[in-house]
Image 1: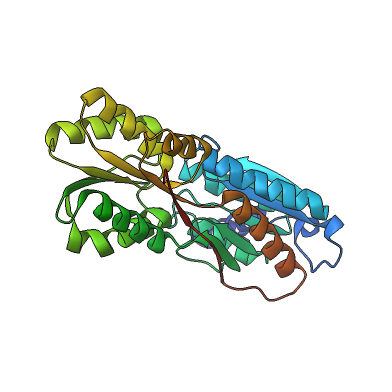
Image 2: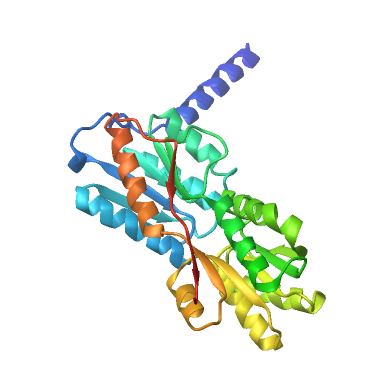
Length: 305
């Protein structure tokens, strides 16, 4: 009898715990035709990177233009924090979620939580591996990686020794930019070093210092983003080596560095446009309209010429 009572109590507590994770009834979304009643949650991987600040600005500007309220949270490159942030946004009764994942695999549980309560999800710049995503708004990262490799071949010639600074492990942008780069580099270049610097400028500097010491004959570097590229330039300048660097994003500091001849090139994205298109997609989904599963944003190779 005691065993049965314990089992019943345990099941009751489990059910109560499950219920407590559900947003209150008023917080659950419903189809809306008036955008002025709409509330969007935006979860950004980190606002310590100018690219994602521009992305956030694009979201805010487009939402303001349409009269949509936006609640923004910064994951600070912490996957656990981002999952908690998304759960908090769901509790606040958002009608749609815009997520720029820190980690494409880890964010899947948060996407599935949104799916379970009927909140549509749009991902920005990076995808989610699991869960239902209404749309991914992003540049063609594979194509961008190929553009970078082609330019490096043009600048230093075939079979030259090169290095690669990779982004955050697990981020789809890291995988895709690396894939595009290696589509060309594996046949036309000699990639003698590659290491993650987590899309961070300081880590890019530190990693590049180590690479230069271990591989003194490298002629070029492809960095998966401009922040790492700018850090790599600092290390290269300190070493006195003649190594060209190609970045990815097209942020203001990188464009300036290209004009000054410090950075060879950057594969420029349009982060504000990514934010704007994500808001439009979220609005359409909430209003019951169909949207494309993948919404591409054009890239451009920026050089001094």
